[in-house]
Image 1 (cartoon, one colour):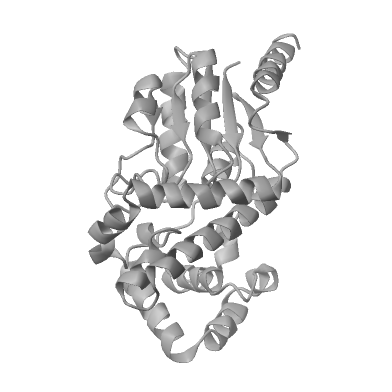
Image 2 (tube, helix red, strand yellow):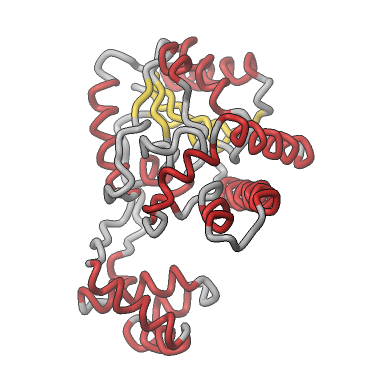
Length: 304
């Protein structure tokens, strides 16, 4: 049976360099599971692989989209499963790396086929939210879909609004589209989690933000500033600099906010990943142990 090795972990932990060496060991290309590295205009702020790194190992799902392109975890599932069908014909072990939780889950488990919301419905409900707040929208959800109303985090306005968007658009409860059934995949999935002590991780995040600024993040953000309303730019590293361009924050404050929001995002990622009991955890410097674990897992499966 073919294998998909997933190297996952929080932002700044050290996935990129390790994934290159693991991919080289197995003669594999790398599939990126970072939802923002898909956009070709954001290489610095998304820490996309450099031209040198992409020359070392063939990468997929990096720099393929324009900022205005619609893309979702469901699209990612479809594209990556199709890609794996091709790659596995010649490469029995393929490496995927990244930290976008929904995208990784979409490949491993599948994603529910929830309809795409039309721009008109989205604009209508967000206008209502801006004028009235969340209370009436929550009441609508309670009446249209009491099941999801009982489950959803009611403080998370994006999730509440998305559920009501689907209810309005389809006339059906949002919960009716959520089957939560895990799809069977025709390949073995080996999940390697990378982790560091909190202080070590935070130091790396702070250093990386300073390095991004030195590499030209300010100029990159300025180029995409006219598109700031797009979901692709609702991203740590850009939205803070947009506040600086708007005159709301000083540059120093914007940089501090990027560091802080990156640390918050890393904590969210770890909370999500820690719920997954299939992940085997390592420090990124345990390269030998990681490769041995992958080889032993593949070998023991072959012997079953």
